[in-house]
Amino acid sequence: MATKNPDTAASTAGAAGMKIKWDDSNMKSSYANVANVTSTREEVVMLFGINQAWNRGQKEVTIQLTDRIIISPYAAKRLSMLLGNVVKEYESRFGALNIEAGPGGETKQ
Image (cartoon, rainbow, N blue to C red; front, side, top):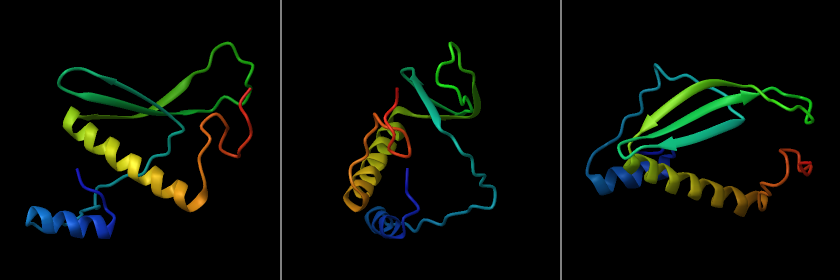
């Protein structure tokens, strides 16, 4: 799994001895504020969706699932490492992310 960061792509290309060409002609963009992950021995399944519930006191919330991505455990491990590096870089620039707080910094009830 590669990343589109030009610096990383260049170093990956040098280490692997091949040039990576990014073709985004069929790419789509999706927004998700909810994710769930399950796995079997052969695959990791990531579900992404949108929680549109505005009332926090609801007894039941429906999440509209929009995308399912299925990858191998090897690709999942590489993705985990890439995401860890991105979060580490983000926090070094902008400060620690408190996952117990909402997006605006408000504490969840």
